[in-house]
Amino acid sequence: MSKILKCISPIDGSLFAERETLSNEQAKEAAANARVAQVAWAKKSLQERIDLVHAAVSKLGESEAETAIELAHQMGRPVRYGGEYSGFKFRADTMAQIAEKGLAPIIVEDSDIFVRRIDRIPLGVVLVIAPWNYPYMSVVNTMVPALIAGNTVILKHAEQTFLVGERIEKAFQEVGFPEHVFQHLLLDHETTSELISSKAFNFVNFTGSVGGGKAMEKAAAGTFIGVGTELGGKDPGYVREDADLDAAVDTLIDGAMYNSGQCCCGIERIYVHESLFDQFVEKAIEIVAGYKLGNPLEQETTIGPMANIRFASEVREHIDDAIAQGAKRCVEVFAEDDGGAYLSPTILVDVNHDMNIMREETFGPVVGIMSVKDDAEAIQLMNDSEFGLTASIWTKDADKAYEIGQQIETGTVFMNRCDYVDPELCWTGCKDTGRGGGLSIIGYHNLTRPKSYHLKKQ
Image (cartoon, rainbow, N blue to C red):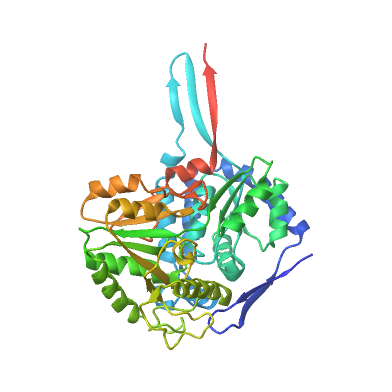
């Protein structure tokens, strides 16, 4: 039985869009069509597949002005920041450029007697389950390399941003993509789990909550279908004694507050060497106090509402819990804070790791800042987390950053930057952040399987 998906706009709580989900029968048919289409798609040359993907990406860019407005309505990001197309295109272009290297065979021997080689073979049908917080850029991480590698792709977008899936599918259709090679399907959770458990797909990529990741692995249990996950994060920043203080404050606070803090690799906790702590906090307060909280459709707005009142309520619970335990709020509540989706950007000090604000994923415009005496204390605190996506180290000493980075339990280590995805590096995590790896040549390896050939000529 079909269900109704509803996108409630965080701008004013109104119904922005609604769609009916596919029935089980319709969903199974779509998946079966993708499996049939994959055979012919994989037979196309690598360059043919790349050219078609490039064409679809370019077509999508023609509607960027519209998508920025749609994103504001769907998840609250201010229109001044655009519609994610530049990042979408950059990642797509990069994955196309490294495709030949990522999919290249390993030639062990090519002699008069033997040919021994390992080829990369597409997995088949790839399901991409995308989040709402970066609804275009998160999709491209798996969608583009999967298609270029010869897989067909089914996209299930988040309920909050299903219009993004429709826009992407429309772009693919308009450039003449082969039918059923890329499909955006409106699916409920039950149908999705049933498709996975019935082996309708050969690989599942999920970006979302830890609970959602567990549901994906449970659905795939016993099927031997690969599941790649990028789940929660509690990413730390560490400012060493020798850091460029101004650059560290500007970048880390932006990393904590951009997109109303709704970033997978956003900064959620900051550790500052005791010699710089007071200056860091003072500069951070000045930056945050200058933000303009308001309607994301207005150009002067620098921070919009959170995507859902429910999300904002969870963030307020973390803030209130920390304050009740002795944390101090450094910036006054904004006048525009309505107690609903519009939530004040918040800096907390006098925090510790007994507080949820420093341990659980908050995913909102709030950051806790702690003073540390040395690298050892910072490393211990950074590792005192169930999550491990990225960590940001601020120092003038690259050797020391690498040394510290080796001791941090995380997927990516940044020096003097944060909240960034480099498509030539593997995007991965550890602990409850999940497993697998996207982007880079490793992303291609995870979307294909090795096939060995041992050919004796005589």
